[in-house]
Length: 182
Image (cartoon, rainbow, N blue to C red; front, side):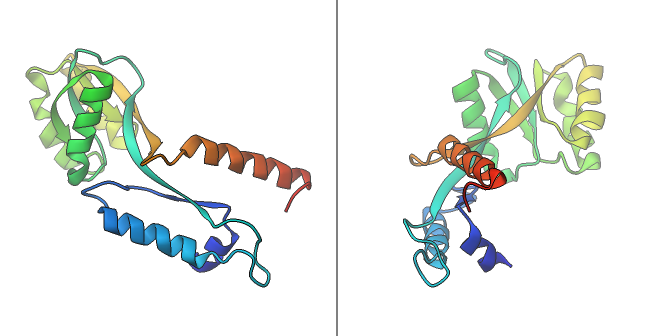
């Protein structure tokens, strides 16, 4: 049903639009394919402009202050994302990342990797997942380390505006619910 869903879509969100998860050529090809698959103004189609495609990345956003802290990060993000996670947390949130575990979805491996938490770590930054609570949080608190959970914020790349598209989608949904627009 993928092509049918694209034909019905008001917009498309493409994620992981940065190297090394997606090369510029891969992101461009994906965006082009989505726009090409949506045929506005055709028989039974929509009239108007092309399908709006928003390119995004996920950025870790601590739920509390971490400025000046030495941090260890527990995430489900793949290892190739590690450097962009580190750069973002250090540049935008002012902490110094001394280690990252990408094993939040593997409790056994996570326990092994978190053994380093006893040395030189002020705070564990952790996504809220099952193992983030029952393994990572417990391990950090047992070691006397503060735990701050992280959200994954959706951020547009190269000028793509995520908030604008989601607000428009919410307006369309409300109008459709009221029956004022199809």
